[in-house]
Image (tube, rainbow, N blue to C red; front, side, top):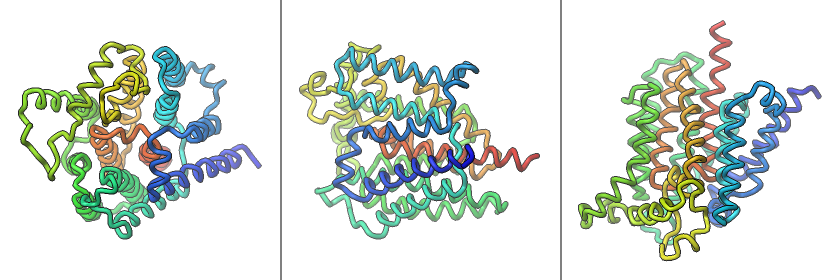
Length: 379
């Protein structure tokens, strides 16, 4: 077995682990509760296996690849911070997984069949939540926010692969616009039944990005900055009493997130370099709901400013590379899916935890896999 066949063989083992994990947790509530509130160590091990299957550490040192050193620096520094702040160990796997995903996203190129396996799993999950599961907002035994995030994230995978698969047939742009609008309408109706305001806003951001927003790199800091600024606005509105009697879909305007963000920031400002770690019982004993409810702020508050800046740099690089895809429909749909996920991550931890982080990596891979194909086509 030659080297390329061996690599592909191990890729399929890794993909199988990912897909079994995604399918199991996104369709079974007990498994969801067991695995998604922590960073499962076996996902970290699987990502390390993916790293070793595609990356030559020796070559990274020989070429002095700066992203490799940023990856190592971020993981090591986060480990040191966790020890210094006496954090729970699970926080290490969360940041290590996310750094690995941002590093590997443009370096691992799954082929069309491998990517179709991810698309098929997303279709199965969408079919389950759209046609089988009857969960609604009125079902107080479940959390409709979780179902909404599952639906929206898998929509991003499915629709990105849909365009990736069909763009080579040189179909007219209006075909993609109409087909995507129909799929988006179906998804939006389902999310509306769950009354998840954050994901409804993410759908609006998705549509605005795909149909209206210029597909330019200067939008990246704008979108990331808006995500980070939103909690500040919420806290100011709460402090000024401007939204005390404002309810949306029967819920308080911020649903307590304003209080959570404020309390986390008060503790974080005392530990900006190391972060506060994930031992929230010790650091925030009086806070009832001990979860940040914001993906980027979670990384900032728990791991500190230096690690957070590494994450922001790698995230900016990965998103900026998507803009180099020459197919306008594919570039538009991938950017819309990424920006939509960033929007939903403004109100939930979302894309920094498994299995969402694996699906985010898949969207990047769909875009990046098209790059070698377009180069070959242009020769």
